Length: 261
Ligand SMILES: [Zn+2]
Ligand SMILES: [Zn+2]
Image (cartoon, rainbow, N blue to C red; front, side):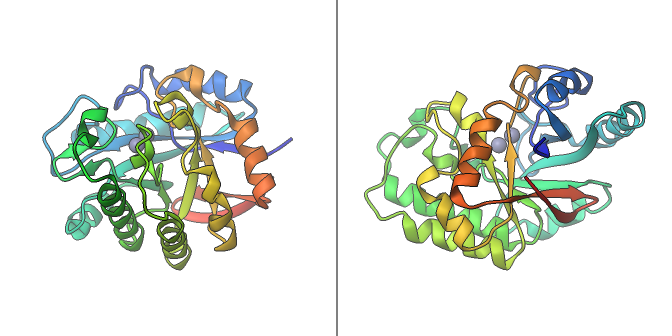
């Protein structure tokens, strides 16, 4: 059996539909060996209904620790999906430092004051080449910050299908090289299939670059409801195998190791 993990899931502690307990049996049914919760944490912005109130981090961790004690047949990891803001690295580090997390996913949702994934209006009338450039710059800064173990949906800017005219290969190459240099994993995020782009992140045409640069990988569902845990994983693993990947990154107390699949 393939050793499968799903480290990107949202429960009702942020914008997921169910309590963590409800994700266990779908995960077992999907043949997963480990799952991890990664609630949205967005510092420096007004609270939104999709992110977790920071005062709930400790109760969230205690909740998962007790769940972990009671559940023996699957490993439960504790993570966060943290928004990256350039220039706020030290504040983010200081804030996260006290929490006993297994991994931290760093994600870029905001470009300026707005998020890139809350509606296509964001893109209207804008220079798409420039938006892609700005998005990749921010992701590259997130990788280089040393704050994160995994980068979430590294090309989320594709979400509404806007296509830049520029050659994207150099952007993906720089992204992958920076990940390798800073020992950060990327995820194949299968939830893109449920969004307007209707495909995984990152763009499958550029997966070979991550392999050539030897960047560690995870497969994650970004599930916001139990029925999506492990969704499309057979296809994602097949795609990775086709690309030449033979092992996955797993995390424990923020230490990465590799497991063959
Ligand atoms: Zn996200
Ligand atoms: Zn997410």
